[in-house]
Length: 349
Image (cartoon, rainbow, N blue to C red; front, side, top):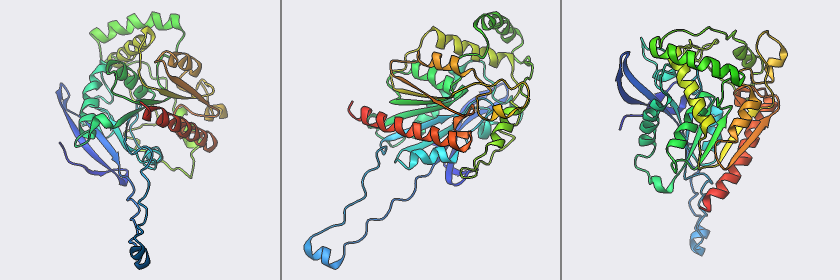
């Protein structure tokens, strides 16, 4: 396997490059980031009187999620930078890993088309490479895998889990992009046109409609107790360019979700309570999802599998963990509550 090296997030994190071969733009890699756990508290040496009486200090209890590996996958025009999210899991004993997919963030190489892919199933290679590192030297049969996806990452992981039954023990989806944000008849109208463009002109650019309001809303509600240091080269204020080949891959993924998937693990879906259309700046954009139609996503989420919990967060943005303080704390509280129940239920299996 490769070598762990220091990560841009600082001393708490390391990263490893995952070679994935070459394509017509050159070398292709993914990047696996690991959050380093805190050093365990040392067990104090027994005192003279304790030794005399045969008393030994009790060792620290085993953390509840000590047998859990978390794999996080980011969304479109994004990468992993959320330190607190990693600490949420490591504080409970889990090992936390985040994957910057090929041509995103840490994995983007000069001359590559940022984020471009023409088939979401290609990311199976990225995930397989990440899992090989995560499971190296581990007894995988006795460890639980928790998948965690945001937006497009939620779509990618949902399709992956359907294709790989029995691999994941649980899944958390933060505003997963399960359906395109247009009425059904409009989606059905544009899909063949996008498919034809993708076949003949895959790098045809789609109209850019992002006015930067989502980034502005995040900055407006930034929580000083949970600061974020974002690399704008990897997460630009306006979304990366959308190409026909990529958009066709997304629409194909949405059709697969609509046709029916079956994720055989419990799923938690975190969503904002409302959607606000970002056609002009207003304060309403600081307390709503301005990317997805959340009611449509909530309905689509219930079709992911037999055990799906949908949690609606009042005042949340598209990334619920980047919302204003109150909504952010609510999101972490809902996540903690669900994880506690999930842990108890999956231990019994």
